[in-house]
Amino acid sequence: MNVENGVHDAHYFVPSPSRWPVVGAVALFFIGLGAALSLNQVSFGTWSLLLGLAILIWMLFGWFGDVVKESTAQQYGQQVDYSFRWGMSWFIFSEVMFFAAFFGALFYTRVISVPELGFFSDTQSLLWPAFKADWPMATGPKIAAYHVMGAMGLPALNTGILLTSGLTLTWAHWALMQNKRQQLSLGLGITILLGSLFLCLQAYEYRHAWNELHLTLASGAYGATFYMLTGFHGMHVLVGTIILAVMWFRVQKGHFTPQAHFGFEAAIWYWHFVDVVWLLLFILVYWL
Image 1 (tube, rainbow, N blue to C red):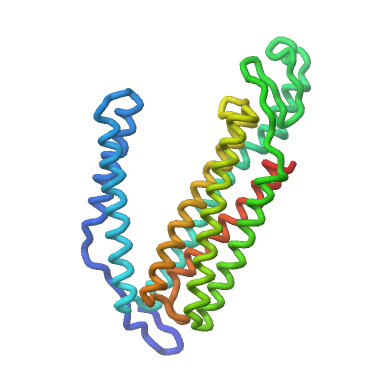
Image 2 (cartoon, rainbow, N blue to C red; image 1 turned 180 degrees about the vertical axis):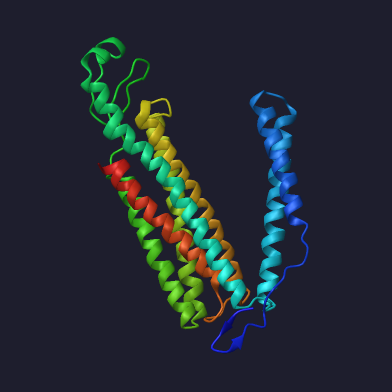
């Protein structure tokens, strides 16, 4: 029981037993089974994978729907609010560590591996006679010629789009705090459109890189790190856009008040995290 200034938090919430964790376990079972069977070219694998994904989507709608109903019914008190904030904070921290591992791999390759291969002349002459330790145009014995993706053009445009989306989302948050519902809906809608535009332009960028620059996953360490970092970031943009779309629909239903809106606030945290990761990507992957 939380005690602050002599006042007890009477809304200590204990959730009812839920079936959704079991449903999620069943979904993961079919997804894992389907992935394993598909890799071994078993025909049933695709159906198992699709079934698992369908069950997973059903679980997400059902579980988050229950949380929304509990929240709108004002069953949550300060204790639950603290729990949600700590949970989201640790989740974003885990995402930070996730990308830190990939940025670490990029750093190790650029600063340590490639220079060492160029430094040891005997090793270089034995393994890769034509090797040049110039990142990112590092060649290898079985790597087809490719061109790097420059920072100007679509990457710079996408950077501007994401930075603008952060501003429009902050504008929407400010509108919520002022209880300006129309501005809130408009700012959130613009942010969703900008996120969708970012994904469309990144898909076009991938098509250009693959077909015209001949930059593939097989293009040495540069190709692998490029698609690994930008691909995972794009997945996070997709997830963030879906989350913001859910927030937009909730706004249309009259959810959130200036005093109680952590669901929306958590989405803002996540989106700003996505923005910061992209800035690092633009500098370290595209620019330098």
